[in-house]
Length: 435
Image (cartoon, rainbow, N blue to C red):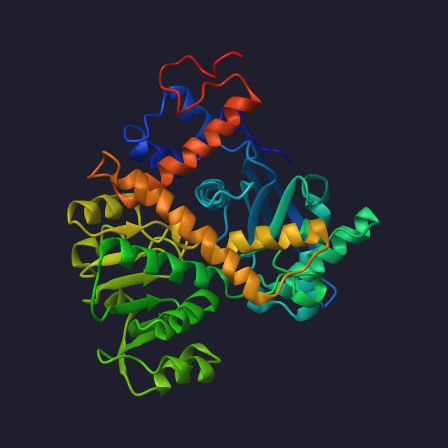
């Protein structure tokens, strides 16, 4: 059901989104009207999904789909399967997706979805039934020209294939662009599985060039799933010294550099990390390691008030969504530690999802090399635009403030043409000039 009102009809807002907007209100010159428009999603939908389990019983799974803003195009965002998923978290992620699509200038709005479930406790059949049931519940509100789901935490190409198949069964027609992140054999894009990591590597390269950093660059990566492992390989191949990696079970560190290729080739489960000749460390020790670049690539809220004073990295590249809390972000800025924000650093995934949607729409499919070339160009262009905003007359503006300013201005400009809202780039208050 749609749910824009809280108990007794009280309007609900995205509290985290409001905090994020407060941080950039002055630097982005946001008006009260701008904030009112951006602080809450356009549509919240939730459903309790019944699924028949293998033993014949019925389990019910709370689920969500939040379409935050569609001014710039169809909303876009992944679906996560996780026992901790809740509406507030999905609100925040949909808000970040809105900004992420805008900062890299792809014609999508932002959305996000989730199901409260531990997929590791489901059989393959139960997982398929849940995936298809999610599409049935939200079928009327998703589609290639309205809202396009994709993978997220604990969802993958196989789950997207089931969802695409279920959507087409309900529609009675071929509609590959309704879901992205599909297997290449089922109209997915080449290069999609490594896109987030490749985009992050390109942003880090651009930052190193911008900051004119020379010499060996030591990197620590928290998270060794799809993003973290591929990023370790990309950075290793580019000459970065990957000295530490971790997963949920803990991590390993070698100040001379880890054997990244051998580590990735031998990695099958969490405990495989500890089979290599390196010092075992905790995730907390990795986060506070003395390195040039710290890359949180796992889950949200990893750099917080409890550990921010111990951060020794010279820079942070956010590859997870929301890994740095607002208080910690402000502290790091005061310490002169640049944080390249998630909406820019990890936007490679949604960018190639956009490329997949374009390929599905045109029925013209690209090689992996072409996808990667286009991704590199898109990410570099976005970085340069953000860097220009950061340095143009605002020497103390943070990377997050610059990225958010670019994204928010793009969303509000689109809103200004769709409705009678003043263009945010026209601070005179006159709006669009008449012919």
